[in-house]
Length: 353
Ligand SMILES: [Mn+2]
Image 1 (cartoon, rainbow, N blue to C red):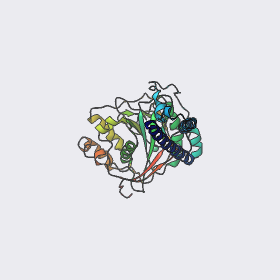
Image 2: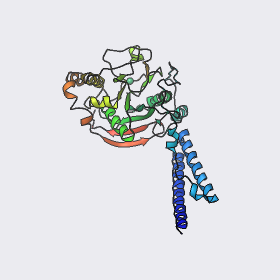
Image 3: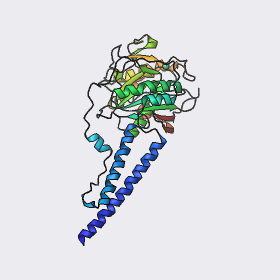
Image 4: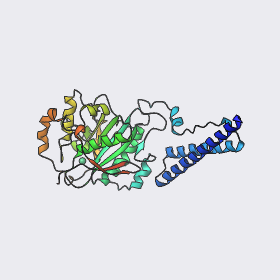
């Protein structure tokens, strides 16, 4: 009798699991039909599919007692992977970069695929300790964004980073605020994943060497040290603009970026001050590794140099604890999960231009 009851219960549990697996399977195929399927997703689908087939064949054979009831998809994939090597093996060094080409989003996708939805990627063959959110402040620069995605995704993949791309789009046409958008990107990215490193990059800057690693270092890092527009050198010693990386700890230590630098200029120098005031220093790659090419463009509308910004820089020491992550206010207008990036539109209470 007891044995009978046990058989009944286990059969019941089995049926439940089967229904659940089928539901998961169909949910995934549905999601996959909405977006391009990455190889990783395909792999997961296959794994689930096989698990279901195994189960059903065993049910048919009437071997309920010996069935392993665990359906492992992601964990079994990762269980056998070791840490990624310190030196990513696929790096090639200097790169050719060309902006005088019209690219469609399809062209770009075909060049950079596969990725997980929202421009997420992790190396398939090793576990990366660099969980990097790449934050790109944005408004009306779709042409630049296509170039950026086309070049950056393959580079970031070769660097074996566990990364995601977050494009933070300023809503409306008030005065632009790069630094505040970067703070928003930091907060929003952390809501999604346990990132330990943040790369802040302008949308029009592409590195000319993939050995310039988009990861975090012992000290806050300045990556765009040799831009073509500055004749492949630093425009001045304390320059911290263009592309920089800070670990979560480093960024928290300086209370993030200031929120009060409206319009063009100064916010990167303020960040440099914050780093120094908190007893850290800026690390940099050498001038060959740190070469960058910038898309040539006109100054954006509503992002004029702000004459008030330079004067604020002498006060960083006193202002930094009252202006930053701890005073950040904004409203998310929309989050769009695109195949190659997350597009987050935000209202940052910009003054009218
Ligand atoms: Mn620019």
